[in-house]
Length: 523
Picture 1 (cartoon, rainbow, N blue to C red):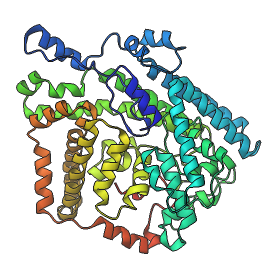
Picture 2: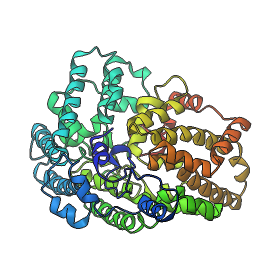
Picture 3: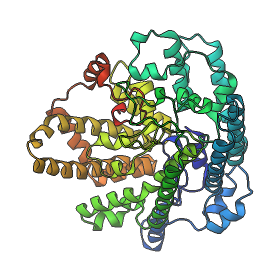
Picture 4: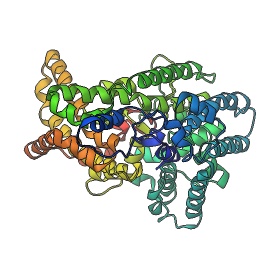
């Protein structure tokens, strides 16, 4: 679990979690109320289930281990102090990112100075947000670096699976770079492979830099080092899998200003939508007895979709703000598009339109929490010898935390993914005969995908086993049963066999250097 997620767990509101720190800035429901059978108490309980508690900010103060400097603001806006500290630190990091790019540019200072400043600022933000809890992160990093330095190269990646994405990724990248031959690596692994052990300063800078210590996103070590050293604009970091440059090569260094402004506008819109809708259509209402008994099933389906639609903007806010901070510092350049415009999506964590209009379970996952999907692919899916899909979902559940709802969601996701794959392989070809049929197929699969995603992630939001099973019982486990029938009835082509074929033909691999290419994600 990331440092940002642990802060969210300590807040006084109900938390939904999320990869890469996505569980922050959550306005939740009161927890721990007892069940009353009827009358005023029952109505009061149902109201408290999905209406924000008026004293949430005050109740969270005792559990906050970070700075209390912003407590007056927390009291005024009635938000937990943890969340106020997080947003304030991210805005401060945004300003520091602009300063970092302008005054500590690689052409003006050495990589050593950039490493030191990025690390010290990161430590300060962690201390402000989490207080003595930040020592846990430092101890993790220190112990992990000790393993890297003193353990044998063949074994260094194995104990890393219990800690964070960056440490795990770094371990595998060192393992690939120092113990494997070129022919044993995929094109993507060759690009990411690290050929020497990082110094302690480089390691701390990579893990604890101020741009990503609170909310990520994770990134490849080689990409981060290219940013620090000022080589991220060279052709090596602008080539696609075929070795061709992504669009026109510019002589001058591109500016991220337009992209940063655009992403900040997206943050503002997402935050406004979330704050406006989160209390109007809470997910928790889907398990309210009156709602279940008195609402037609088709309206329950529509409500669930709208509730999840209102919930997603908080993740859009957190991840887009984190992306904007990195871009403002000059990190995230990903070559040029066909028109010669610079792309700043190297470490972007989501594509909002592709999420909202996804026509398959896989497309939704490919565009949601992108860097975590890439991490899961690189450390698990590509390396797991047996049932890689199930192993990847289980690893994702373990990484998110210990709440039972996570495991219910990701176990359900295994069946949903397999069923969607079977339908795509067996049914989709019949709809490719004309444009009209294609559009009909897209509309049907869009509606199915949105309902399936909403149904699957309810336990992720509710967290506990009881409420999650209550919801599934109210739906008679219908999508679970449907997916089981589809998987049993329709044959599925092996994805691993296809992947081996792509490895044998590197020129067809679309994920060698473009970290944000949809082709690079398999989960």
